[in-house]
Length: 251
Image (spheres, one colour):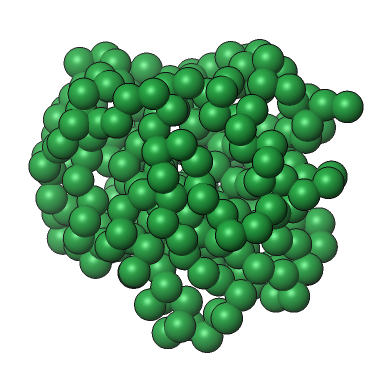
C-alpha cells in the first residue's frame, strides 16, 4: 500500500517532526538507495519519489508531513524487510540493561521499537510519545491487541514528549535530525530522566545511502549533546546504515 504523500507546515522552534521522528522501510535492495527511514514511523524521506517529494536539500521549517492515517502507514513502517538493516533486537539490547526499566520512545508511531522495548522490559513501563493523535490511538490499540499492559502511548507536544513521569531511558531513532533547537530540547529533556537515566540516539551515518538528503553527522550530535550537558557513555557500531550513541547527563 502506498502511504499518502500530503505535506503540511512544520512547526518551528524545538518542534519534533510530525509524529516526532520514525521509519521508512526499504522494500527491496533496489529502492533502498531512494528510501530513508525513521524508526517506528514518520520519516518518509525519499530523494524524489511518491512517498515524500524531495526537500530540496534541507528541512524547511515551514513544511511537515501528514501522518494522521496510522493504519495506512503501518504497512510501510512495520515492513519485515526493515529488520535487515535496522537490527532491532540488537538496538533494543544495547541500552536495555534491566527488565524493570522505564523507557520513553520519542517518535513512537506505529510501535516498531516500543513493542520490542515492552517485551524486553516486562517488569517496567514503556511510553510511546508521538505528536500525531492517530498514531497515539493506533499504538494504544496495538498494545491492547498484543497484550502489552506495560506499553502506553502518550501525545507529545512541540516542546517535549510530555511523559507522565521521569524514565530511565529516552530513545530516539531517526528523529534527532528533525529537531530545530536540539541543544535546548535536550537541556529540557533532563527533567524527564530519572537519576542515572540515559538517552539513546539512532540516526543515519553520512555514508548511508538511506535517510534524508542532508544527514546529521554523529560528531555534531556528540558536540550538541555535550553543549546540552551530556556525555557519551557508549558507541555501539553494529548498525550498517546508522550510528547508535548512548548519553547520560554529565556530572
